[in-house]
Image 1 (cartoon, rainbow, N blue to C red):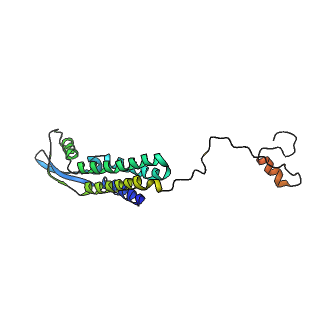
Image 2: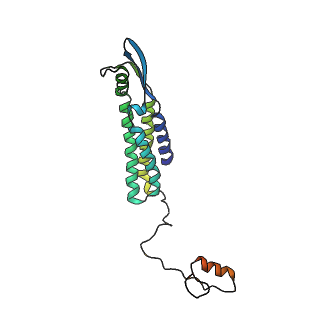
Image 3: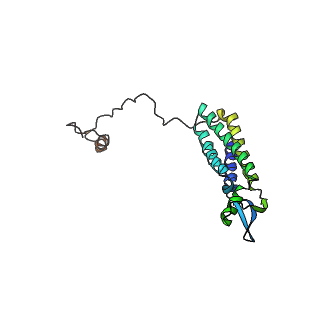
Length: 190
C-alpha cells in the first residue's frame, strides 16, 4: 500500500507541476496580452521533493533497521513539504508579475484578471499520498522484508578452495586447471 501511495503521489505531483497553475493579463502600451504560469514557474519545490520522495520510496525497501527509519522519515517530510509548497503556490502571483515586467520592460507592471487552476491542489493531494506512504513506512516498515545480504562481503577473509589435482587422462580436468590459473603438468606456474 505504501509503495502504491508513494508512486501514485509522485506521479501526480510531477504531472501537476508541468501544468498551468495561473493565468492573467498584462497591460503594455495600451494593449493587453495573456500570461500563463506553469507550476514549475511558480515553485520548483514540489517537483524536486517528488523526486526525493521517489528515491526514498525505493530506498526504504533497500535498507534495514535504523536506516529504514531515517529514510521513512525523509519520505514523510518530502510529502509534507510538497503539500505545503503546493498550497502556498496556489495563490502566488510572483511568476506572472515577473513575466509581465519582462514583457513590458516596466518592473512595476502587474497582472490583472488573475485566475488560478486546480493543479496546485492536485500537487498537494499528491504530496498527501507521499506523506501517507511515509507514515505507513514509519509505522509498519520494521515488519517489511529487507533486501538479502547474500552477496555482501563479511570482514573475514574466506579460505581459498583447493581444487583436486588434474587427471592427465581427462582433458576437461586439464582445461579446468588452466582456467583456475594452475599448471596441469606440474612443471611450474601457468
